[in-house]
Length: 134
Image (tube, rainbow, N blue to C red; front, side, top):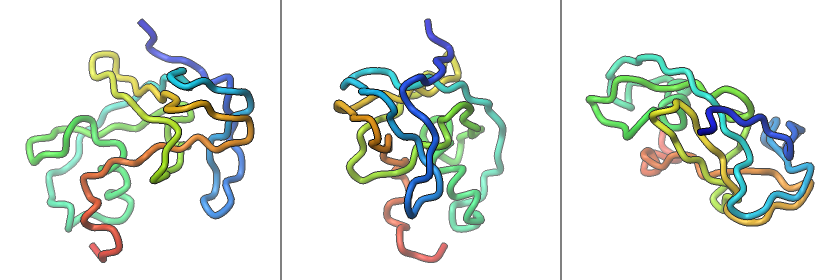
């Protein structure tokens, strides 16, 4: 059972228009695990999304540990490069939570070439809120 995998085929580089991002430095094959990131869990308050600050919105949409419900009791901080993967509407990696091991695996959805940014689709619970002031 893998409880952490240090990425060897990616590096953090400048991502034009985004700040920094994770880029392939070697070929990554479809289905290959790019990284297994440990997570640290912590509690959060149960205010409705309309009451959250911008930073809280990002934390809850990306780092929520389990489906967002009023009964949800925690969120998570992703370690390793896990927080460096940017969003894409056409992702080349996906993330898969392992609740039991407290990890998130990042897995290639297709072959990724060196120099290509590794991006996943961020959580979608708030898609109806995009473009709206919260």
